[in-house]
Image (cartoon, rainbow, N blue to C red; front, top):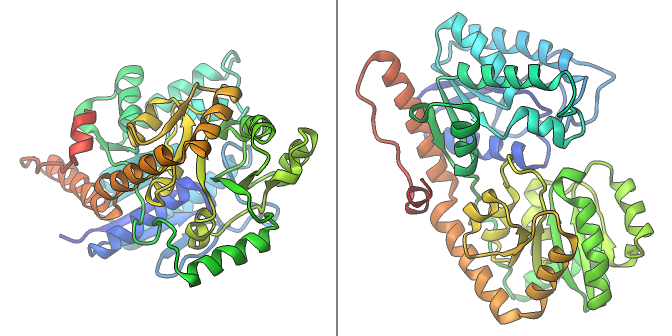
Length: 417
């Protein structure tokens, strides 16, 4: 059965980073299954072909992409609430699908007004993210009220979808969220577009063109990173680890792609003495991401958050790249044995694992192949859309007092339970 879905995204959709990619890919995959999706979002962001996007009031003094916590979000969310309500009254949705906590709060209020079930697509803890971004002091007087608000928002949704079993476990164990309303739909990847680099003359010429455009010297092995640049993403630690890697292996180059605040990280690279071995091109369009990742010999994901997902890792996996990441529950859940794990937050351990992945080429190639196989088996957007659709069916059946249809899982997900 096809549904009309109001998708609420309290962010500057679309921008080229993980949470937005998840929204985009989920929406595309659900549209392919016949559902109508209307996205209510902030006034700024890129319009995506084939999407019905309804934006909130224009705020002329806020043009930059809103990443993470910000005081501006208070009035932006008020504007989004009004826009989302008007859209809901117009399209009369069967389901409200909310991304990010503010959206879940907005969606839950609208859902109660219109008697429409609400699905919360959970990207990580609200208060933990605010602490990670330096916006909230865990010892401050606002922390406990924010935790209470987060608890209330979590509980208001008919069902919560997490991007990892680790996040689901956190919701159960730390927030007492009931398992019957909790589902895991892992971050996924388009394995037809993100795939290992081939060695045809045309492909080699394209890679060489991009290398020259970026100014990467010839004969350098490349470590790639693609994501937000921020302390909680591990950007500082990555640059500090790069210092040790380059000292041991002078033929290594770091291609660190993403935004915001590129200049400050370029200054840090200069201060660490690694600027000649580091390229930071800034924002890379998602449609071009696979072409830039194809330059890599090794990929790195040094995220410092213990609660958020790791959407970049499936992209790396699909490329068949050996992946170095910190030993966190989310990384282990996604990669299993198909990764190189550094001690959490340890720059020297991160450097050592990068060196191992670069130097032990036969093992690294084997690990990259395992990652590619795992991406195909466990991380397709087609499966994700089928699972999300099943959550819709279960929530609607529960409201109607009917038996719940089964929720489809992969073998990997079943083992993760």
